[in-house]
Structure formats: structure tokens, C-alpha cells
Image (cartoon, rainbow over all chains, first blue to last red; front, side, top):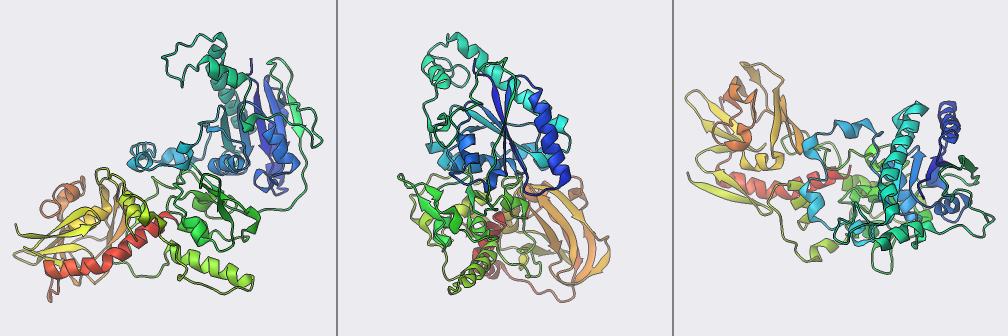
Length: 374
Length: 150
């Protein structure tokens, strides 16, 4: 049975002893756990697309738990950009802000989520789950170990019955896969589960499927400095192209089916999060930005309240996100000897040409505003 | 009740012409002693479902223009409430304190906010207020949309 689970420990960028201790304590503890393989990589976000770290992660098959010093969304979509796709595994150990959100404001229930087509909807659902845990959530290794155990249990509960292969054709595919799906699970055909070959990593020590085999710890070293580039959350992205229009450094591009992607991440200007501010869906993450909303914090979006004070008579002092973004962009343009463009280079409003969609009841102002021709 | 309509996108904000309006999106209706204030349909539409209303000052008292009077929180938004003009604050609507939902249910009636005695009332009529809305609506959309991304 393929119910061994891979746990990735992505190390912090700093040599902060508290962080290092937590990482090492996690690794030591994970080694004692049956059915777990551990891969230790340098900071996930800094890994080069073709570096040994990312190659090792690409070689992992089956379900993955990722422990990193990043918001869960940031980690998930960083992996996704590197071809490591998976369904978002629901974790129970997470940032508190998320728990405090009003149950009535469940983003899943928000009409906004239902009415708009997200890029992730047009993709084939990956046959594996990726669970991302933010190491900043707790300073106790035990908390993470028990969550890993919980996830391992969750996955094996769902996987064990598959071995029987008695799924009725009419049954819900989410709970009972067909034989064909089962086969694909055992022998994945997608690019997310390719075994490693070449690149000095002949043997992939973590593709073992024997439940009883003792834990393997695989440490990947990779040299390289810190990186800075946007990460797109495709569960939010609507492919509106505001970002590609706004960025004047050629970071964004489109793939063969005209879906937006971060084509030239290293063209991105260090410290500049401007495109994230112009994204109408908050889909662009800069995992290292100091503002949690830009770094991929979970509470952004449906539960974040809009401050209407300015509209209700507050003195006008602040700048809009677009103004800030334009200033940030100018700063970067001038830094490379180009001319500042200010607000003049407003994104062309491609969405205004989009075919009108049928509107739901007017229960969400934000929804509506996004569809107006601003 | 005679009323005009201001279109907020596809939403019809009804602006009754039986009362006056302040630029901070409150209606003002003359009473025996002074004026009674409440949120206009435009303001309520921006706020949507009001969850919480809190006053930071005690009535009666003197208030100055744009003074912070309290705060309001709704499902989607929050805001400080600023005074619409100079005046003497007589009372807050007592029935809103425990349950502010009347602001949504009956904004031009039971959902009134407070009463002021004003020496020099200077408000807009419905037509002028709608013209004002025409001027600020674009900006309001930009502000809201911008904040979504901050």
C-alpha cells in the first residue's frame, strides 16, 4: 500500500537558533514515526527551479506534508509553480487569524467564490494532496508531529479501501475512485510524480511504498541567495491580466492556453510588491513581504473588512493601493534608469471587454465593484 | 413617498425627497426641536448588514463638524462615524444599541441614528445629494477596490 507519506522540512533563511532548534527537533521526531520519509531542503521560496532542492521535491510521489516558514498558501503555490501540483490538504494546525474569522463569512460560502471562474477550475485535479503547515504557528515540535500523524491517518483511511478495488461505477468519485483512477494512483502518470533520474540523484530514497520501512531522512543542500518573485494563487486568480499589464519588467507571461503565469521570476524587482496591490483578487503572493496580506496570510479576502471611514467623512490622507503600487513601480523603474510612469500607465481594462456574466442577487458589493468598468 | 434613485452599478439607492442630506451620506429630517439623522440608502448599501454600532460620546453634548462620534461594523466593512455638522447632540436612537439591524431594515424610519439641534442647517436636497453621489461614486468604488488589495 502506498500510504507512506513524505514530509518536507523547508528550513528558514535565518540562522535563528530557535528556528533551527525547532527544525532539527522536528526532523529527529519525524524519524521515529513509522511510514514517514523526511526531505530537508533550504528555504522553499529560494530554491531554484532547476536546482537539486526542487528536483528532490519533484521526485516525491504520493501525498506530501510541507513544513515551512511561509504562509500555507505561499508554500502551496510556490510548489505549484514548480510543477509540484496537488490538491490543497486541509490542515488543522494553522494561523489563528483564520480560526477567529466569523463562521458566517466562510469564504467557501461567499457568492464571490462561486460565481467567478478561477484558473484552478480549468485544470485537471491532481491525484495527490499537499498539506502545508506554517512553522510560525507553534514553537512546539509536538504540535507539528501530531498534525503530521493526523494527516497520515486521514490519508490512509481514505486510501486503504481503494485497495479492495470494488468501487461501484455510480458512486461518488470523491470517496470511491474507479479502478482506472486507482491504477493511476498506484502508478501516477502526471508530471507531478515522475521519479528522479539523472542529475546525480539516481535512486529516489523516498519513493518507498513499504509501510514498515524505517523513516528515511534525505537532506538536500543547495547554494544560492535569496530570491524575490511573485507567486500566483490559482485558486483565486481569474486570469484577468491586470498584473501582466501593470508590471513593466516582463515578469508575467502566458502559457499555451493563455493562462497567466510568472514567466520570468528573476526579472522581478526585489522588494517591489506592486502587482500584488493591483490584483483584484488578491491572488498574487510575495511570501517575503512584511505585510501579511501580501505574504499570503489566510485571513485576507472574504473576512477582511473594508474601512469606509474615508467615504463617510474621514480626512483624506491615505493613498489607494493603486497609487502605492504606481509609486513602487516608479521607484523600481528609476532604479534601473528608466522613466517613471506614475498612474499614467494604468492597466488596460481587459475585463471590460469580457462578456457580461449573469449577476447573482446583489448580496456582495465587492463582487459587483469588481465587475464594473472602473 | 416621493423618491429619486441613484444607481450604484445595478443597485438602486432610493433617495426620498421628503428630507435633506449631509455630504457624509446621512439624511436629515426636521423634527420639533431639530434634526433627526440616519444613513442614506447609499451608505447602507456600502455597509451592508450592520453587526455592531458603538457611540464614543454621551448625549447630550455639543459636537463639532466631522467629530468622531462612534463606529459601525458590518459584515463587509467598518467605519468611524463622523458628525455631519456642528450642533447640540440631543440623543442617540436607544433602540439601535442592542440591535442595529433596523439600519438595514428601515433606514429611513426606525433605523435613525441620532438627533441634533442645529443653529445654521446647511444641507442638500434630494436632487443635490444625488448630484453629489454622482461625483463621489467613482471615487468610492476605487477606494473600496483599492482597499481590497492593500
